Image (cartoon, rainbow, N blue to C red; front, side, top):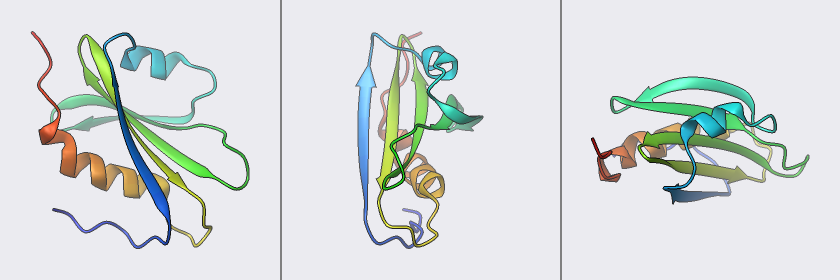
Length: 103
C-alpha cells in the first residue's frame, strides 16, 4: 500500500452506479477543474465540486462500463493537504479491487 499524504481529517467515499457514466461526469457543468487520467489502465476523470469555503473535495470517476465508480475525498481542515493527491493515492491502492468492466 502507498503512503497517504499527511492530513488531519478527511473522509473517503466510494460509490458505484450502473446508471451513470464517466462521460456524464465530464459533461456536468458543476464539475470543475477536470483532468483526464488513466488509473490501472482504465479511463478516469478527476474533478472538484463546490461545497463551500469550509469543505474541499476531489472526485475521481473510474470507468467501469456500463457504469462508473466514483471515489470522493472530503476534507475540512486547511493545513495545505491536497485532497486530489490523497484521493489519487487511495484510487491507485484500491483500483485492483474494482471489478473488471464487462466486455
